Length: 321
Picture 1: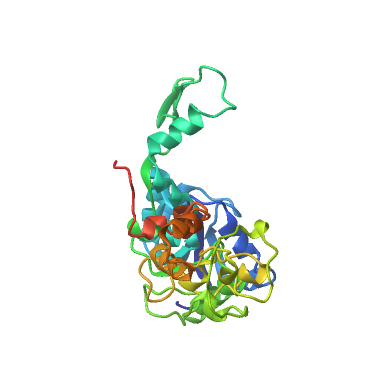
Picture 2 (picture 1 turned 90 degrees about the horizontal axis):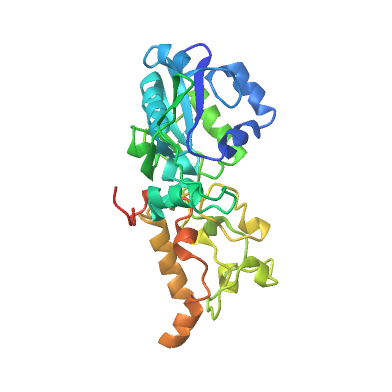
């Protein structure tokens, strides 16, 4: 970056807002950010309109942190706009990096989602049959809504992305390290995953590991677990073996299985497929009927193994459109 304060933007696409909170969770470090950067656009924290963004020169922003998936026409418009205005565009958090929780919508169709929300919801008034329209006349004017796309996209499906910061949300320490690297001009090659490790969560987990021989899978609340022993060895699903490190082993350290939010580990092409391989190798049976019974104890496996990365996986979508 050049001399002077950085010109920075943050944007919230299709996401829950947790990534914005993660930036604020850097606590007093946010004061260092304020000293080093001018926040030019951050809808959740400072006033600013799209027209302000459109008025900027191309490349005027040094850095944009884009969190959230691309779910509708507004998300796509702003993604392309910020790409043009930014020297560095960072996919910030799981939804922007891999599609995230919103990406699970790719398991079904847009029409099915709209039908459930607007026609099949128990809280609707009887006879309700309306659906949101992109243009609705209101008192002589037109009310416009973004177009809801048929599928969910990760940011890199829409525009070129310079760096990827994983996590749901990224750990505050990782946010701090990424911003510090930008300020100091110490970023790695473009296209890199930054703010994360180069091993698996399992590699950094302190729980003891031995031989996995599983006769039954458990939800965490169904078993009194051994706090020192590998969760998967106790039959509790944990994505640590297929997930990139860097979070500080937050979930297994809190007696919960790794959810996989840091995405596939280095060298892993498909996180869910890698985890399926790991789970299959732990089942202690060669009897087809018993194996079927053991597998029957799994939760919704697709939604578990691809919770944060379905749009980035090889599965893609079942439905066309």
